[in-house]
Amino acid sequence: MGAAVTDEELSAISDSLRAWQLGESSDGSHLMEAARHYAVSIGDPEFVAAVRLFIVEEQRHGANLGRFLDLAGVPRARSNWGDSLFRTIRYAIPRMETWVTPVVMVETHALIYYNALRRATRSPVLRAICGQILADEVTHIRFQCERIAILHRTRPAWLRLLTINFQKLIFAGVTLAIWAGHRKALRAGGYDLARFWRTGWRKMNRAWRAMSPERYRFAGPPLVRRPDCTVLPMKAPQPRR
Ligand SMILES: [Fe+2]
Ligand SMILES: [Fe+2]
Image (cartoon, rainbow, N blue to C red):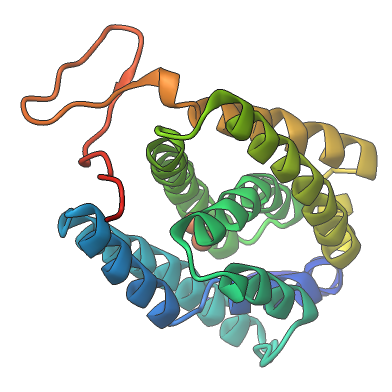
């Protein structure tokens, strides 16, 4: 089966798609390194396995999008300012929170982006890839939000409030940067700036609620499920010594 994408569709989405494909194709080595250190610090070796599975899914997104670009005869990107900026932020401070926070923001926008992309094309291959990525990103966001809840568990309420407000500033910037870089494809998928902005904040507000430690019961084995909360599959972190 070919790419089955029209020239008109490609002209709206190809630059943007090349950038997202590059962003989805990280080898994950920095993250694995950070995850190993973090897992040791909290005494939770299973966290490394979970992160490895996460990286494999991201690489599948990159590989599938890459194959689509090849089929469509669109050269893959080697560098992109948005991808470089995103990597710089993630690597700025080698802490798990500095890595998780921008990822959950970009994955929140990925939910909008791949939905827009799916609407911007009639290509069955690309639509199927978008559907697969959308399904994965929902669980990725949950995974990141649970981790932030764990990280925030021992943080005083005032400091958490400050952290979330700081994140809101960052999210505003991320939203505008993604719009600047991908507005052509987003418009082709039915999003003008106002709708993109509104939808992004609605989804991110949901993510912020899921980051709240109060939503979870932290317990060692056996895990106890409360009717109104999600049971964390991972151990809560111990304070660093
Ligand atoms: Fe992804
Ligand atoms: Fe993801």
